Amino acid sequence: MSIDKGAEKGVDHRRLGRELELFDTDPLIGAGLPYWLPDGAVVRHALEEYVREAERRAGYRHVYSPVLGKRELYEISGHWAHYQDDMFPPMDVGGEQFVLRPSLCPHHAVMFRSRAHSYRELPLRMAELGGMFRSEMSGVLGGLTRVRAIGLNDAHVFCTLDQVAEEAAAALRLIREAYAAMGIEAARYRLSLAGPGGKYVDAPEKWARATALLREVLDASGLAYEEAEGEAAFYGPKIDVQVADPAGRESTLSTVQIDFHQPEQFDLHYIGADGAKHRPVMVHRSVVGSVERAVAHLVEHHAGAFPAWLAPVQLAVLPVSDAEYEAAAGLAARCAELGLRAEVVGPHHGTLGARIRASRLVPYQLVIGAKEAADGQVAVRLRDGRRLDPMPAAELVERVRGLVAAHATALWDDLA
Ligand SMILES: [Zn+2]
Image (cartoon, rainbow, N blue to C red; front, side, top):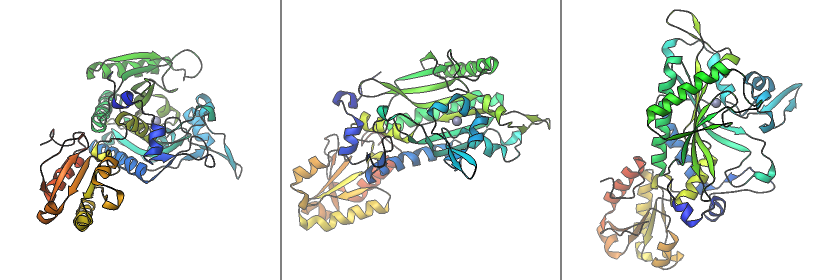
Protein backbone atom coordinates (compact mmCIF):
# COMPACT_ATOMS: atom_id res chain seq x y z
CA MET A 1 0.00 0.00 0.00
CA SER A 2 1.40 3.36 -0.95
CA ILE A 3 1.28 6.31 1.39
CA ASP A 4 -0.82 8.92 -0.31
CA LYS A 5 -0.72 12.69 -0.14
CA GLY A 6 -3.58 12.72 2.34
CA ALA A 7 -1.62 10.49 4.70
CA GLU A 8 1.48 12.67 4.54
CA LYS A 9 -0.52 15.74 5.42
CA GLY A 10 -2.85 13.92 7.77
CA VAL A 11 -5.86 15.40 6.03
CA ASP A 12 -9.24 14.87 7.62
CA HIS A 13 -11.98 15.15 5.01
CA ARG A 14 -14.35 16.70 7.54
CA ARG A 15 -12.02 19.61 8.27
CA LEU A 16 -11.04 20.09 4.63
CA GLY A 17 -14.64 19.68 3.46
CA ARG A 18 -15.64 22.58 5.68
CA GLU A 19 -12.59 24.71 4.75
CA LEU A 20 -13.13 24.20 1.01
CA GLU A 21 -16.88 24.61 1.45
CA LEU A 22 -17.71 21.25 -0.11
CA PHE A 23 -20.17 19.92 2.46
CA ASP A 24 -21.22 20.36 6.07
CA THR A 25 -23.78 19.19 8.60
CA ASP A 26 -26.19 21.01 10.86
CA PRO A 27 -27.63 19.64 14.11
CA LEU A 28 -31.05 20.85 13.06
CA ILE A 29 -30.96 18.61 9.96
CA GLY A 30 -29.39 15.85 12.01
CA ALA A 31 -26.19 13.90 12.51
CA GLY A 32 -25.15 11.74 9.58
CA LEU A 33 -27.18 13.82 7.14
CA PRO A 34 -24.62 16.03 5.39
CA TYR A 35 -25.60 18.63 2.84
CA TRP A 36 -23.54 19.47 -0.24
CA LEU A 37 -22.50 23.07 -0.95
CA PRO A 38 -22.07 24.23 -4.59
CA ASP A 39 -18.38 23.29 -4.89
CA GLY A 40 -19.02 19.88 -3.33
CA ALA A 41 -22.00 19.38 -5.62
CA VAL A 42 -19.74 20.09 -8.61
CA VAL A 43 -17.34 17.33 -7.54
CA ARG A 44 -20.25 14.96 -6.94
CA HIS A 45 -21.84 15.75 -10.32
CA ALA A 46 -18.55 15.24 -12.14
CA LEU A 47 -18.09 11.88 -10.43
CA GLU A 48 -21.68 10.79 -11.09
CA GLU A 49 -21.45 11.80 -14.74
CA TYR A 50 -18.19 9.91 -15.12
CA VAL A 51 -19.78 6.79 -13.67
CA ARG A 52 -22.94 7.04 -15.76
CA GLU A 53 -20.91 7.51 -18.92
CA ALA A 54 -18.63 4.56 -18.09
CA GLU A 55 -21.70 2.43 -17.37
CA ARG A 56 -23.42 3.45 -20.60
CA ARG A 57 -20.31 2.44 -22.53
CA ALA A 58 -20.26 -0.88 -20.67
CA GLY A 59 -23.82 -1.70 -21.69
CA TYR A 60 -25.73 -0.67 -18.56
CA ARG A 61 -29.11 1.03 -18.76
CA HIS A 62 -30.12 3.47 -16.03
CA VAL A 63 -33.34 3.44 -14.07
CA TYR A 64 -34.90 5.35 -11.18
CA SER A 65 -36.75 3.76 -8.30
CA PRO A 66 -38.23 5.21 -5.11
CA VAL A 67 -36.20 5.44 -1.89
CA LEU A 68 -38.81 3.62 0.16
CA GLY A 69 -41.00 0.58 -0.21
CA LYS A 70 -43.44 -1.58 1.64
CA ARG A 71 -42.20 -3.73 4.49
CA GLU A 72 -43.22 -6.88 2.57
CA LEU A 73 -40.67 -6.05 -0.13
CA TYR A 74 -37.87 -6.43 2.42
CA GLU A 75 -39.45 -9.47 4.03
CA ILE A 76 -39.25 -11.18 0.63
CA SER A 77 -35.70 -9.99 -0.10
CA GLY A 78 -34.50 -11.19 3.30
CA HIS A 79 -33.41 -7.75 4.54
CA TRP A 80 -36.13 -7.78 7.20
CA ALA A 81 -34.88 -11.03 8.70
CA HIS A 82 -31.13 -10.48 8.26
CA TYR A 83 -30.53 -6.74 8.14
CA GLN A 84 -33.25 -5.15 10.28
CA ASP A 85 -30.85 -3.72 12.88
CA ASP A 86 -29.42 -1.39 10.21
CA MET A 87 -32.81 -0.26 8.92
CA PHE A 88 -34.97 2.66 9.98
CA PRO A 89 -38.19 1.59 11.72
CA PRO A 90 -41.27 1.32 9.52
CA MET A 91 -43.69 4.19 9.02
CA ASP A 92 -47.42 3.52 9.19
CA VAL A 93 -49.37 5.13 6.37
CA GLY A 94 -53.03 4.28 5.83
CA GLY A 95 -52.75 0.86 7.40
CA GLU A 96 -49.60 -0.07 5.45
CA GLN A 97 -46.01 -0.10 6.63
CA PHE A 98 -43.25 1.56 4.62
CA VAL A 99 -39.52 1.50 5.23
CA LEU A 100 -36.69 3.65 3.92
CA ARG A 101 -34.78 1.24 1.76
CA PRO A 102 -31.53 -0.28 3.03
CA SER A 103 -30.48 -1.25 -0.51
CA LEU A 104 -31.66 -1.00 -4.12
CA CYS A 105 -31.70 -4.70 -5.01
CA PRO A 106 -35.33 -5.45 -4.11
CA HIS A 107 -36.63 -2.62 -6.29
CA HIS A 108 -34.49 -3.75 -9.20
CA ALA A 109 -35.54 -7.38 -8.78
CA VAL A 110 -39.22 -6.35 -8.90
CA MET A 111 -38.53 -4.18 -11.96
CA PHE A 112 -36.88 -7.12 -13.73
CA ARG A 113 -39.85 -9.30 -12.83
CA SER A 114 -42.36 -6.76 -14.18
CA ARG A 115 -41.55 -7.65 -17.82
CA ALA A 116 -41.03 -10.96 -19.58
CA HIS A 117 -37.40 -11.56 -20.59
CA SER A 118 -35.85 -13.78 -23.21
CA TYR A 119 -32.34 -15.23 -22.83
CA ARG A 120 -31.42 -12.97 -25.74
CA GLU A 121 -31.79 -9.92 -23.47
CA LEU A 122 -29.25 -11.24 -20.99
CA PRO A 123 -27.02 -10.04 -19.49
CA LEU A 124 -29.50 -7.30 -18.56
CA ARG A 125 -27.56 -4.59 -16.75
CA MET A 126 -29.72 -2.26 -14.63
CA ALA A 127 -27.95 0.70 -13.03
CA GLU A 128 -29.07 3.43 -10.68
CA LEU A 129 -27.39 6.12 -8.65
CA GLY A 130 -29.98 6.06 -5.93
CA GLY A 131 -30.68 6.90 -2.32
CA MET A 132 -30.66 4.38 0.50
CA PHE A 133 -30.61 4.61 4.28
CA ARG A 134 -28.85 3.13 7.27
CA SER A 135 -29.93 3.71 10.84
CA GLU A 136 -26.43 4.35 12.22
CA MET A 137 -26.25 5.43 15.88
CA SER A 138 -25.33 9.11 16.45
CA GLY A 139 -22.08 8.22 18.21
CA VAL A 140 -20.41 6.71 15.14
CA LEU A 141 -21.41 9.37 12.61
CA GLY A 142 -18.94 11.72 11.03
CA GLY A 143 -18.45 13.71 7.86
CA LEU A 144 -19.20 11.74 4.74
CA THR A 145 -17.90 8.33 5.80
CA ARG A 146 -20.62 7.30 8.27
CA VAL A 147 -23.94 8.69 7.12
CA ARG A 148 -27.61 7.82 7.48
CA ALA A 149 -28.64 8.85 3.95
CA ILE A 150 -26.48 7.36 1.20
CA GLY A 151 -26.25 7.99 -2.55
CA LEU A 152 -25.19 4.63 -3.95
CA ASN A 153 -23.68 3.95 -7.35
CA ASP A 154 -25.40 0.63 -7.75
CA ALA A 155 -26.22 -1.87 -10.48
CA HIS A 156 -27.64 -5.33 -10.83
CA VAL A 157 -26.77 -7.59 -13.71
CA PHE A 158 -29.38 -10.28 -14.38
CA CYS A 159 -27.65 -13.05 -16.31
CA THR A 160 -27.31 -16.75 -16.92
CA LEU A 161 -24.98 -18.89 -14.83
CA ASP A 162 -22.59 -19.05 -17.81
CA GLN A 163 -22.36 -15.28 -17.95
CA VAL A 164 -21.70 -14.61 -14.27
CA ALA A 165 -17.90 -14.86 -14.27
CA GLU A 166 -17.48 -12.55 -17.26
CA GLU A 167 -19.93 -10.00 -15.81
CA ALA A 168 -18.14 -9.99 -12.46
CA ALA A 169 -14.76 -9.68 -14.21
CA ALA A 170 -16.05 -6.79 -16.34
CA ALA A 171 -17.30 -5.03 -13.20
CA LEU A 172 -13.85 -5.42 -11.65
CA ARG A 173 -12.30 -3.86 -14.77
CA LEU A 174 -14.72 -0.90 -14.54
CA ILE A 175 -13.68 -0.39 -10.93
CA ARG A 176 -9.97 -0.38 -11.79
CA GLU A 177 -10.55 2.03 -14.67
CA ALA A 178 -12.45 4.39 -12.36
CA TYR A 179 -9.71 4.27 -9.72
CA ALA A 180 -7.12 5.21 -12.36
CA ALA A 181 -9.26 8.18 -13.45
CA MET A 182 -9.81 9.28 -9.85
CA GLY A 183 -6.08 8.97 -9.13
CA ILE A 184 -6.66 6.62 -6.19
CA GLU A 185 -5.48 3.12 -5.39
CA ALA A 186 -7.08 0.12 -3.79
CA ALA A 187 -5.45 -0.71 -0.46
CA ARG A 188 -6.54 -4.33 -0.77
CA TYR A 189 -8.85 -6.67 -2.65
CA ARG A 190 -10.83 -8.87 -0.32
CA LEU A 191 -12.94 -11.94 -0.95
CA SER A 192 -15.58 -11.57 1.75
CA LEU A 193 -17.13 -14.82 2.90
CA ALA A 194 -19.88 -15.82 5.30
CA GLY A 195 -18.94 -16.41 8.91
CA PRO A 196 -20.47 -18.08 11.93
CA GLY A 197 -23.72 -16.77 13.35
CA GLY A 198 -27.20 -16.33 11.97
CA LYS A 199 -26.52 -13.26 9.86
CA TYR A 200 -26.42 -15.20 6.62
CA VAL A 201 -28.93 -16.95 4.44
CA ASP A 202 -28.64 -20.67 5.07
CA ALA A 203 -27.99 -22.23 1.66
CA PRO A 204 -24.55 -23.89 1.72
CA GLU A 205 -24.66 -25.10 -1.88
CA LYS A 206 -25.39 -21.61 -3.24
CA TRP A 207 -22.65 -20.07 -1.11
CA ALA A 208 -20.14 -22.62 -2.33
CA ARG A 209 -21.04 -22.02 -5.97
CA ALA A 210 -20.92 -18.20 -5.67
CA THR A 211 -17.64 -18.31 -3.76
CA ALA A 212 -16.03 -20.57 -6.36
CA LEU A 213 -17.09 -18.18 -9.12
CA LEU A 214 -15.66 -15.13 -7.35
CA ARG A 215 -12.40 -16.97 -6.64
CA GLU A 216 -12.19 -17.83 -10.31
CA VAL A 217 -12.70 -14.16 -11.26
CA LEU A 218 -10.07 -12.93 -8.81
CA ASP A 219 -7.55 -15.59 -9.82
CA ALA A 220 -8.00 -14.75 -13.50
CA SER A 221 -7.60 -11.02 -12.80
CA GLY A 222 -4.07 -11.53 -11.49
CA LEU A 223 -4.83 -9.29 -8.49
CA ALA A 224 -3.53 -10.20 -5.06
CA TYR A 225 -6.40 -10.71 -2.61
CA GLU A 226 -7.17 -11.92 0.86
CA GLU A 227 -10.12 -13.90 2.10
CA ALA A 228 -12.07 -12.73 5.13
CA GLU A 229 -14.80 -14.62 6.93
CA GLY A 230 -17.80 -12.78 8.31
CA GLU A 231 -17.66 -9.89 5.80
CA ALA A 232 -20.12 -11.19 3.17
CA ALA A 233 -23.52 -9.72 2.37
CA PHE A 234 -26.30 -11.70 4.04
CA TYR A 235 -27.32 -13.17 0.67
CA GLY A 236 -23.91 -14.02 -0.78
CA PRO A 237 -20.13 -13.62 -0.91
CA LYS A 238 -18.51 -10.56 -2.48
CA ILE A 239 -15.32 -9.02 -3.70
CA ASP A 240 -14.65 -5.88 -1.65
CA VAL A 241 -12.26 -3.22 -2.87
CA GLN A 242 -10.79 -1.62 0.23
CA VAL A 243 -9.38 1.89 0.49
CA ALA A 244 -7.48 3.34 3.45
CA ASP A 245 -7.91 6.72 5.12
CA PRO A 246 -4.93 8.85 6.26
CA ALA A 247 -4.86 7.02 9.61
CA GLY A 248 -4.67 3.69 7.74
CA ARG A 249 -8.23 2.68 8.59
CA GLU A 250 -9.72 0.60 5.81
CA SER A 251 -13.21 0.78 4.45
CA THR A 252 -14.99 -0.82 1.52
CA LEU A 253 -15.53 1.46 -1.44
CA SER A 254 -16.47 -0.85 -4.32
CA THR A 255 -17.98 -4.33 -4.40
CA VAL A 256 -18.87 -7.15 -6.76
CA GLN A 257 -21.32 -9.71 -5.43
CA ILE A 258 -22.86 -12.90 -6.76
CA ASP A 259 -26.36 -13.65 -5.56
CA PHE A 260 -28.42 -16.80 -6.07
CA HIS A 261 -30.75 -15.88 -3.20
CA GLN A 262 -32.78 -12.86 -4.27
CA PRO A 263 -33.61 -14.21 -7.77
CA GLU A 264 -35.22 -17.16 -6.00
CA GLN A 265 -36.95 -15.03 -3.36
CA PHE A 266 -38.51 -12.86 -6.06
CA ASP A 267 -39.14 -15.83 -8.33
CA LEU A 268 -37.30 -14.22 -11.23
CA HIS A 269 -37.07 -16.01 -14.52
CA TYR A 270 -36.24 -15.65 -18.17
CA ILE A 271 -37.29 -17.76 -21.14
CA GLY A 272 -34.39 -19.85 -22.37
CA ALA A 273 -33.54 -21.06 -25.89
CA ASP A 274 -35.47 -24.22 -25.00
CA GLY A 275 -38.64 -22.20 -24.44
CA ALA A 276 -38.67 -23.07 -20.74
CA LYS A 277 -38.38 -20.83 -17.68
CA HIS A 278 -34.92 -20.45 -16.12
CA ARG A 279 -33.71 -18.64 -13.03
CA PRO A 280 -31.24 -15.78 -13.66
CA VAL A 281 -28.33 -14.99 -11.34
CA MET A 282 -27.89 -11.47 -9.94
CA VAL A 283 -24.50 -9.80 -9.92
CA HIS A 284 -24.61 -6.77 -7.63
CA ARG A 285 -21.80 -4.31 -8.22
CA SER A 286 -20.79 -0.80 -7.27
CA VAL A 287 -17.97 0.96 -9.11
CA VAL A 288 -17.32 3.91 -6.79
CA GLY A 289 -19.49 2.83 -3.87
CA SER A 290 -21.46 5.54 -2.14
CA VAL A 291 -20.79 9.02 -3.49
CA GLU A 292 -20.33 10.20 0.11
CA ARG A 293 -17.52 7.77 0.85
CA ALA A 294 -15.97 8.21 -2.60
CA VAL A 295 -15.79 12.00 -2.25
CA ALA A 296 -14.51 11.72 1.35
CA HIS A 297 -11.71 9.49 0.08
CA LEU A 298 -10.94 11.79 -2.86
CA VAL A 299 -10.74 14.81 -0.55
CA GLU A 300 -8.34 13.04 1.80
CA HIS A 301 -6.25 11.35 -0.85
CA HIS A 302 -5.72 14.47 -2.95
CA ALA A 303 -5.75 16.88 0.02
CA GLY A 304 -8.26 18.94 -1.96
CA ALA A 305 -6.11 19.05 -5.14
CA PHE A 306 -8.51 16.99 -7.28
CA PRO A 307 -7.72 15.75 -10.80
CA ALA A 308 -8.78 18.55 -13.18
CA TRP A 309 -11.96 16.78 -14.31
CA LEU A 310 -13.17 16.68 -10.68
CA ALA A 311 -11.94 20.11 -9.54
CA PRO A 312 -14.69 22.58 -8.52
CA VAL A 313 -12.75 25.31 -10.37
CA GLN A 314 -10.53 24.07 -13.18
CA LEU A 315 -9.03 27.36 -14.37
CA ALA A 316 -8.36 30.52 -12.36
CA VAL A 317 -8.00 33.50 -14.70
CA LEU A 318 -5.82 36.19 -13.12
CA PRO A 319 -5.70 39.62 -14.80
CA VAL A 320 -2.57 41.45 -13.61
CA SER A 321 -4.45 44.76 -13.38
CA ASP A 322 -7.94 46.09 -13.99
CA ALA A 323 -6.88 46.91 -17.56
CA GLU A 324 -6.87 43.15 -18.38
CA TYR A 325 -10.10 42.36 -16.57
CA GLU A 326 -12.19 42.34 -19.69
CA ALA A 327 -9.82 39.99 -21.50
CA ALA A 328 -9.90 37.71 -18.44
CA ALA A 329 -13.70 37.75 -18.25
CA GLY A 330 -13.90 36.97 -21.98
CA LEU A 331 -11.61 33.96 -21.55
CA ALA A 332 -13.60 32.67 -18.56
CA ALA A 333 -16.82 33.00 -20.58
CA ARG A 334 -15.26 31.08 -23.47
CA CYS A 335 -14.24 28.30 -21.06
CA ALA A 336 -17.77 28.13 -19.67
CA GLU A 337 -19.18 27.81 -23.19
CA LEU A 338 -16.91 24.82 -23.72
CA GLY A 339 -18.04 23.19 -20.50
CA LEU A 340 -15.00 24.10 -18.42
CA ARG A 341 -15.22 25.66 -14.98
CA ALA A 342 -13.27 28.93 -14.92
CA GLU A 343 -13.27 31.77 -12.43
CA VAL A 344 -11.82 35.27 -12.76
CA VAL A 345 -9.84 36.23 -9.67
CA GLY A 346 -9.43 39.98 -10.17
CA PRO A 347 -7.10 42.56 -8.60
CA HIS A 348 -9.67 43.43 -5.91
CA HIS A 349 -8.79 40.04 -4.33
CA GLY A 350 -5.24 41.23 -3.62
CA THR A 351 -1.77 41.15 -5.17
CA LEU A 352 -1.06 38.71 -7.99
CA GLY A 353 1.09 36.63 -5.61
CA ALA A 354 -1.71 36.47 -3.05
CA ARG A 355 -4.23 35.50 -5.74
CA ILE A 356 -1.98 32.73 -7.03
CA ARG A 357 -1.61 31.39 -3.48
CA ALA A 358 -5.36 31.57 -2.95
CA SER A 359 -5.82 29.56 -6.17
CA ARG A 360 -3.27 26.91 -5.17
CA LEU A 361 -5.75 24.02 -5.48
CA VAL A 362 -6.93 25.12 -8.94
CA PRO A 363 -5.18 22.98 -11.60
CA TYR A 364 -4.60 25.80 -14.10
CA GLN A 365 -3.77 29.41 -13.19
CA LEU A 366 -3.82 31.69 -16.21
CA VAL A 367 -2.09 35.04 -15.80
CA ILE A 368 -3.01 37.81 -18.24
CA GLY A 369 -0.80 40.91 -18.30
CA ALA A 370 -0.84 43.80 -20.80
CA LYS A 371 1.25 41.89 -23.36
CA GLU A 372 -0.83 38.69 -23.13
CA ALA A 373 -4.08 40.68 -23.36
CA ALA A 374 -2.84 42.43 -26.50
CA ASP A 375 -1.71 39.15 -28.13
CA GLY A 376 -4.63 36.90 -27.04
CA GLN A 377 -2.22 34.85 -24.97
CA VAL A 378 -1.97 33.53 -21.42
CA ALA A 379 0.96 32.74 -19.11
CA VAL A 380 0.14 29.39 -17.55
CA ARG A 381 1.04 28.14 -14.08
CA LEU A 382 0.16 24.59 -13.20
CA ARG A 383 -0.95 23.70 -9.69
CA ASP A 384 2.20 21.62 -9.17
CA GLY A 385 4.38 24.73 -9.59
CA ARG A 386 5.36 24.32 -13.25
CA ARG A 387 5.27 27.50 -15.36
CA LEU A 388 4.69 27.27 -19.10
CA ASP A 389 5.69 29.74 -21.81
CA PRO A 390 2.92 32.15 -22.82
CA MET A 391 0.67 30.52 -25.40
CA PRO A 392 -2.45 31.42 -27.35
CA ALA A 393 -5.45 31.30 -25.01
CA ALA A 394 -7.40 29.20 -27.51
CA GLU A 395 -4.64 26.56 -27.57
CA LEU A 396 -4.56 26.36 -23.76
CA VAL A 397 -8.33 25.97 -23.56
CA GLU A 398 -8.35 23.19 -26.16
CA ARG A 399 -5.57 21.37 -24.37
CA VAL A 400 -7.33 21.55 -21.00
CA ARG A 401 -10.59 20.49 -22.58
CA GLY A 402 -8.91 17.39 -24.00
CA LEU A 403 -7.35 16.46 -20.65
CA VAL A 404 -10.64 16.94 -18.81
CA ALA A 405 -12.61 14.95 -21.40
CA ALA A 406 -10.06 12.11 -21.10
CA HIS A 407 -10.43 12.14 -17.27
CA ALA A 408 -6.65 12.47 -17.12
CA THR A 409 -4.92 12.72 -13.76
CA ALA A 410 -1.89 14.38 -15.37
CA LEU A 411 -2.06 18.18 -15.57
CA TRP A 412 0.01 18.51 -18.71
CA ASP A 413 2.98 16.55 -20.10
CA ASP A 414 1.85 13.02 -19.73
CA LEU A 415 -0.85 13.32 -22.37
CA ALA A 416 0.73 15.14 -25.29
ZN1 LIG B 1 -27.83 -5.11 -4.68
